[in-house]
Amino acid sequence: MRTTRIAARCGVAVALLLSACGSSNSSSPGGAAPTKLGDGEGSLKIIAWAGYAENGSTDPKVNWVSAFEKDSGCKVDVKVGNTSDEMFQLMQTGEYDGVSASGDASVRLIDAGLVAPVNTALVPHYADLSAFLKDQTYNTSGGKNYGIPHGWGANYLMYNTDVVKTVPDSWGVVFDKASPYKGKVTAYDAPIYIADAALYLKSAKPDLGIKDPYSLTQKQFDAAVAILKDQRTVIGEYWSNYAVSQTAFEQGSIVLGTTWQVIANLAQGNGAKVATVLPKEGATGWSDTWMVSSKAKHPNCMYKWMDYVTSPEVQAQVAYYFGEAPANPNACALIADDPKHCDVFKATDAAFNKGISFWATPRKKCLDGSGDNCVPFSEWIKAWTEIKG
Image (tube, rainbow, N blue to C red):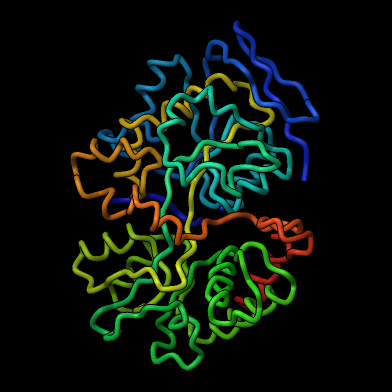
């Protein structure tokens, strides 16, 4: 099992008007999705997480892009996005046809008018994707669907079993100012991590009235920021690069903190005495979405790509190589290298999925529909800088 992922996450969309002989783009206040597709335009330019669009250049044995190029006639140009912020900036150039956005970027892209609504009927494999990934706050807006689910994972709590003798059952263990593991606690390095504190406070301080960790009033937000500033005193290292986190746990310089399941798998494979747990409060997580640029020059090829990359055969390859749960559960039976892959990543476990609060970019207009008094993501970014000092 391996992964190459690093980091992680208001306007009018532009419609794609596609004819039978090709495509054209024009602005549409309604942001209408296309009703039919034409022939591929011969090229496709996408932004993707490393490991999502492999063409054999990283590893000759890992290549699903070439088959797509041969079958579709669309030559693929892949730009690896190392962070959600970088992906957002790249999409602003208008040079790309699509992007594999995480929830801390997808809503920003929608609100900025950088992505267009999609017609899921034009992506045949969409019907096979897990229902719990569809019509979520991070891939829909205003009753319109803005993307095709790709893969997902939870942000677990990992601990060193030789040092942390009692199995932790709450995120409170990483927010304890008097932690016996001071200097050996880790946390994910991104503004979206503020939601982890909010999720903990949702049950730890019910009087705050937090319902959605991405829809926070100023009072709720301030409480989350305060607990993270306290946590800073016990943090040994923030991480965004999975390899750095893996090494820290293997070497024992970090014994407790947020992780991805693939990091735990790799560390365990190298002999590290670590285990993961989903705390009683649940967890945040990431669910990536393929989105079409509102300025796409090759929208037909982008639609062809979205259907191809969500097919069971390709999903099986991506999920295993990247280290995630596939969006298409039909892929599970095809992961021959690890028949238990989908069990480990809880790919078909709807109940498990329900316990995850997937990343979604906060808006002033609350994502949970509670009002228009929520703290927008721009303030989360500022606060994160203050938290880290």
